Structures are given as C-alpha cells and as structure tokens.
Image 1 (tube, rainbow, N blue to C red):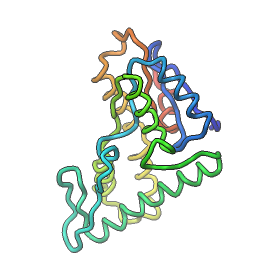
Image 2: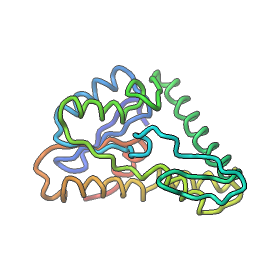
Image 3: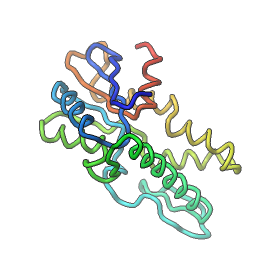
Image 4: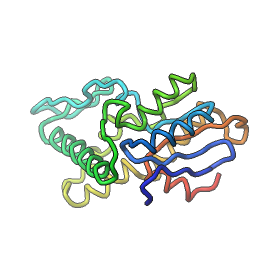
Length: 205
C-alpha cells in the first residue's frame, strides 16, 4: 500500500479512486483534478451517514430491530455494535495520524467522500451514493450470530465491511445510475477506500 491516493482505470471511461479515510493537501489537489474531468462520480457513502442522524439507539431488554433505517438494539447488541464503530474509527484516526492526514468523520475537512460530494455540488457534477446502508451492514454482522466476537467475529466483520461482495454491489449500483459500461461515452469515477480498489484490480469487465 502506498501513502497516496491511487487510480485504477477499470474501463476507458471509469476510474477507480482508492483513498485513505482522511485528507491532506495533496489528496485535495488530486481529488480536485479527478472531479474536474468527470461527468459523474460514485461515492462509497450512503444516505444514513450523510443524514447525520443517530442510527443506533439503545433499547435495553428488547429484541434488536431495524426500524426506518435505525437500529434499536438490546443491551448486548448495542455494546457490540458500539464497539465496532469505536474500533473502526480508532483505526482510521491512527492511520490518519501516521500519514499526516486530517480525520473528521462529519465534515469535508477530513472526510474524502464529503469533500468530493462538495466538489461535485460546486461544479454541477452528478454524484451517487453507492455503498450499502450502514444500518444494513451492521445488522448483517449481528445476524451471523457468532458468539466469539473477539476471535471469529473479526474475520466476519472484515468480510462485511471490506469484502468482495460489497465492492461488487457498489459497482453494480453505479452502473444502475449511469447505464451499462459498454455504452458509456463520458468519463466518471468511483471513489472508494483503498481495500476496495485492490479488489477492482483483480476483476475483468
């Protein structure tokens, strides 16, 4: 893994942009240059995170449920999901610190997806959220019902968050918005985390 944003031309008119979850000055220059040449951009982002509303709420002594894209979790499930979020953010902050990047999950100052979204809005470029809904990803982890969450859970969580199926779904959603790649006549980009870019490098369209 390099320490810079990496580009992969998966199709003559579609560039995969592999990012780190944070931003520095060079990242902003690179992303600006990419967006300028695009007619559309897909983002590893979803409506739940973009809305900024709490999507995990504690309901002690009740069965965990997903209602209107909010997870109402019993005590054990709530603690488990809270730990997932906490550990994921801790890992991101650590990587950002090591690479000299600003990390800010809620604003474009340190969130590359929000930064690109802002660029697209400023330049009138179509953008699409193509990631799984965060709440659905978390519920998928719970439904696997593996009790040893400090052992086997780690592998399962990685499959849900960074696995091949998620990468495939993001590309499929983008195609639904822009049409079949064989018919694509304008340039666009799919902005994702670096782990997903590694998957896209291995497939042939």
